[in-house]
Length: 278
Image (tube, rainbow, N blue to C red):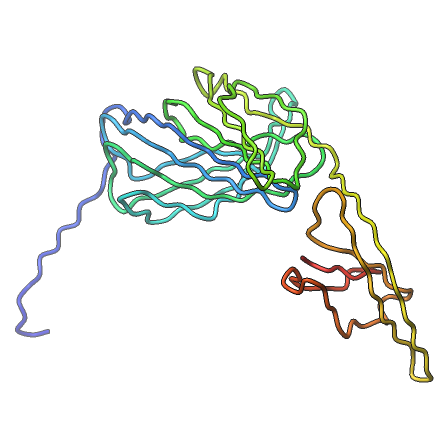
């Protein structure tokens, strides 16, 4: 615009700092809560950054993890991204397990101490077979150890354990039946570390029912009023499955009631049956 004063703009190219990369020390406290229908994992890192600063951190983890929350105490996270890496065979034909990389970016270079970098994740539900404790570690960091607390909810029965290189420090059972096992890493470095594993048996449930059925048949069709009493003597259930008369696709559910009413989450048709979600 005519008559305005000129504006000086200086553009500088950001260059990578010369010299050795910063030295990073990391300690982690992990809590893993296990159940047949859901598993939740939390990692809390204490990080020391010496001889420099970082604008980005990369955390390498097990492929079973699905992070959904990343936060830093006393600071801000610009963005974060979890990238899954599929399992593949190495040069010797050995299959390497699936893993992932969590990339965290900060709005400005961070140096000194990060008191708490908190990551929350979910995992796939427990299934029968071998379960391995999922890991999450700061890439290229010197480990200052890991403390691990495994919480096994009452619906997941304790299987055969292998503590790996972790030393049990405490075990307890809470009033609701949750089993809590505390462990500490004893390996000198990440390369020699071996995660705890557990062999899970198939979920055991003893369920008894008493059924009352009343059919009403008229020229317009047929209707069924079914009353089912459930008695669960062992284990826990998060859904009830009711087989419908064939052909099931022609039936419609008009009403669905359960006592106590507050435990009913919903219901849906699934193939030849009705699934009652609790």
